[in-house]
Amino acid sequence: MTGVDDELAASVFARDCASRGVLTDVTGRWGGLALAALHDGAFRFNALRRRVDGVSEKMLAQTLQALERDGLVRREVQATIPPRVEYSLTDLGARVAAKFVELIELVEGEIGTVREAQAAYDRAH
Amino acid sequence: MTGVDDELAASVFARDCASRGVLTDVTGRWGGLALAALHDGAFRFNALRRRVDGVSEKMLAQTLQALERDGLVRREVQATIPPRVEYSLTDLGARVAAKFVELIELVEGEIGTVREAQAAYDRAH
DNA sequence: GTTTGCGCTTTCTAAAAGTTAGTGCAATCC
DNA sequence: GGATTGCACTAACTTTTAGAAAGCGCAAAC
Image (tube, rainbow over all chains, first blue to last red; front, side):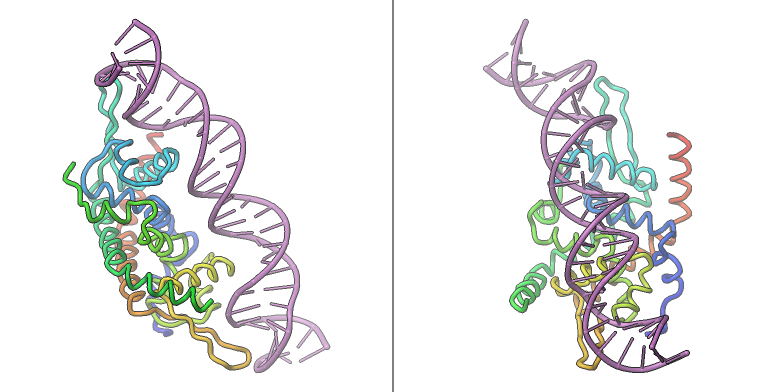
């Protein structure tokens, strides 16, 4: 257990590494869900908000801005009146989203196992 | 874009679905890092804390309890004096951690791209 | 015999998330 | 044709959560 992967240890585990910041955006409360939602296609702001149940307007706006800054999400304003704003994934965003969707599917597929574990834990405590 | 994956839409995107809770634990601020750290082997509490740079004792304890409840992490107390407490991954935990590590590696590998995007964004705003 | 490490828990404060309201404009309903 | 709804946000305020610091009892090392 001392044979630790130093490449990993040197980066995301380090408090001040940039990758930790991105990971925080991606795996933040809403980041992953936004990415996963956009994995199905482009969406306008309020459509996205309807997909990601429970997110507030403030948090969705904040989340999308962070992901746009990280180069994972593309924001396109159409110069109509009133303006339409469309969000979609960049190439990198699509790759990250794909991984995240795999994670989600794993968790969803094993939700029964998880529920049993939770019930057992709650009984024991 | 209306051809949405309903299996997905029905679960993790729904506010009250159990899978959302697990996802919150897994992708929470410290959940993923703890899982990734344990992916390299079993660790005792303080060893884990040293690996996951920046986590407070309180948050690590809380995170590990949540993951244990979800059946992703195993907690073993050795009846010595003073007691040793070892944390390791369950089978499911190992599978989730593997996915998470892939995500981390993707992000780390593309950190250059991300940094450029951030710089461009900051220039434009 | 004083410091160090162990695995936490408790208390207090700082930061983040959530809630509510407001913006200006256009299309739709009645 | 007046009112409502939807659009894409921003700003002010409140609540929840995270983080920092101290304390716990005990044992081994210095």
